[in-house]
Amino acid sequence: MLPGVYLAATGAATDTQRQIAALLYVGPRSAITGPAALSAHGINAPAESAVDVLIPAEQRRHDFGFVRVRRTTRMPAVVYSAGLLRFVPPARAVADTALHLLDIGAVRTVVAAAVQGHGVTVADLVAELRGGPTPGSARLRAVLMETAEGVRSAAEGELRDLIKRAGLPDPLYNPRLFRGAEFIAMPDAWWPDAAVAVEVDSREWHLSPRDWERTMARHSRMSALGIIVLHYPPSRIRTAPRVIASEIGSALAAAAGRGAADIRAVPAR
Image (cartoon, rainbow, N blue to C red; front, side):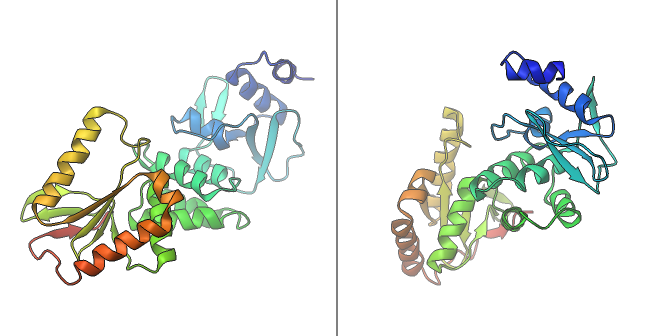
């Protein structure tokens, strides 16, 4: 038994020791992928006790202990090294992680964490998806479609699902609103024909008092211009979707055709 495998079995190994042991087990033509690689790149990853290691398809290695072998015909050309450790690039780590997540909310969380501030683009992830396996890719495909439309968090993805299920008109997600050259706000969802905005007030994304103050200032700027602003926490989106759909529908009906001619919306990139 490898020393690292023994240490892991006794609960004495560090994450680094486990990862080194995994690479020693599968050989030099390998790289760590999945949640461990996400963490190495500074991207929030789902908790996982196993270490996913990518190896060429022709290589004969099998899962052993905490080592989970992932065979591929597309070994990445670029591998990130950190001492004795080797990791796949960030976009590959996202794709490999997402393919094995069964909950679309978890996929949304991983994609959002990677795209926001970690140099991973939707185009990078689409390229990985096109070149990768089809089985298990449906959830990642759906999340990338949402992200391309402007959805940037798991909670906003749940809002989008709610809107789709209720048959409400599609809004713009995270557009930048201007009046002339003056920036007004970037609401999570925006219906220009009715001048209705929805904000998802999530503690996951608004942690500090300063962030909360900015949220309130944004609300005031929009309200002062006659925009109807509805606020929902993620927990209410999950527990009261019909009520929220009804409230949004009522707001759209009440303001139908009113719009805001002097407000220009720039769609999210």
